Image (cartoon, rainbow, N blue to C red; front, side):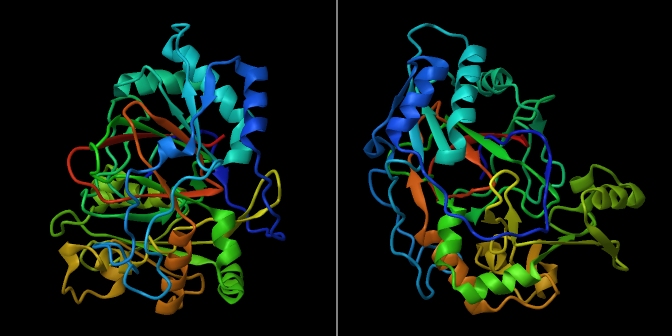
Length: 392
């Protein structure tokens, strides 16, 4: 799932540098900065208010790849004092949504680099139109979902407000950086809760700092991905014979040349088979060099795009498809297979670094997509989370 992503398209760099520790601001520093910028409309929420009523179980969870394997944590951790930072919005002055969006953006600009994830609670927003007004007040340049790997319909026409995901509620979505499989991806992501699933029904959003993940990974695994990178592979069949997302729907055309040109513009290498099915490949670093700090960032979708993610889902139970015939798959950047024990290690470490928070209707959370991975816990009942992305 994604949060609000901001707008100028930021391209990956192949230059790496040494890992530098991130300095985290305290809540006192955050409050001081905020009061100097936007007055006293924000009040920090105690971490206990953000925590789920019961800690979601991770180990042996159905439809969660790796949950039965070595090293997998038993439960999802609760929020800390500084991650995510929760801020209650005082709307007593009857500010408009545009004004509140501008105030939230000032707070984000001042604090997101340190806190990495900021949740705003108490906004007088209930609908997709309200969410749109908030994003317009933030004045970011929207990033669309063109080239995205999963179905994500727009909630509002002529806008960049999307459903966060259409995956069934029974599935737990693995941790990932948004659109890391493309050369152009969001720098910031905003999620908005239009409808929460209800008490004790799941649906928590897990978050993990990329710096925490890479610090706990086996140095040999880090070194191997640093040298080889990642190859992302996508299989888009012709619409005439598959339940997968066909290439006609992905690129909004029935013309192979137009679809191929669109894929190449997104950085993909394109191949077709004799059945008219499309195969896309894109090789990328597993790490990025942060454009401001130079920090080496673990930034990828190695596990969520690996075919083992699909294989854990019920529709593929008992399937004997070759790996490249699943919707997504990943290899090392040289095309060699990623070892099962390496995949298990990455999944176990990533989930051990994750914390989860409980949504309330009207919540808005801003994520630094370069530094934070996000996912979604399974849930029952209704739930509606919207997303807006930008690249600045």
